[in-house]
Image (cartoon, rainbow, N blue to C red):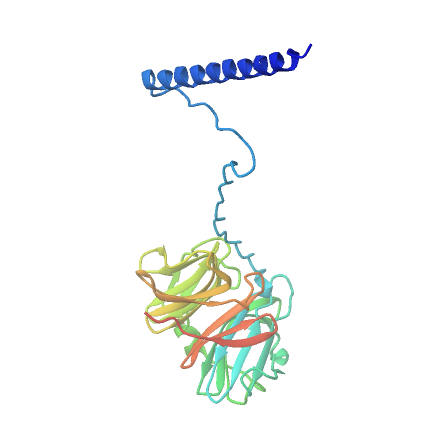
Length: 304
């Protein structure tokens, strides 16, 4: 009985030796198989603490939410005069019976005075521009007898208290007809660029608008796309215009300079501007003036 434990010990050692030989043989066979067939899948690695493969990470691609199309009667217009005088309007609709609103500020948009010429029977505003430094002119419709959409061009020399018709201004104006049936230009009527154009502007020899979220320009023969997508408003000056648009690398709205050949310069991001809010834009010497929501702000002009 005294030799029994030693016998068991030697037996255990023999079993471990046999297992080691078997494992070694299997490893050699596996290596020979890989050598014969390079395309064979290698044996999976052992798993355990510190052996797990890291989970690959991916950077999400920025997406742009397309701005909504502003209702026709809620379209906004903005004009910047001299000495802190601003004019802003909500278009209204002579067809739908939605009254327009015209306001004037003499302190850079801090306070506003309602100067809508209701006494003229105004029913819609299609364009708005500064005139004579601190005055304004507009193309609008008035109720004339049974016609609620009679088109007129008006000017004020009294800070918006009184408005008079000027036929020569109407003949020289470029504007979108109240029913969006045509673009009215001096001596011609041009086709509309799309069913629901917005933010109609004249920029020197260019006529600009927003169509289905794209900035478009009339090149003398047809409407051509210009600049970025997801545009909410444009403003013209000289032979070019700026476009206010959504962008993947901007949390709010970006401002790009757009010309007939496309965008130029480096866009300026304004993170406080929401693509969902009705917006109007005007160019000034100090930059780009934006009427956005309930505020009027100035953002930097893009530079090349």
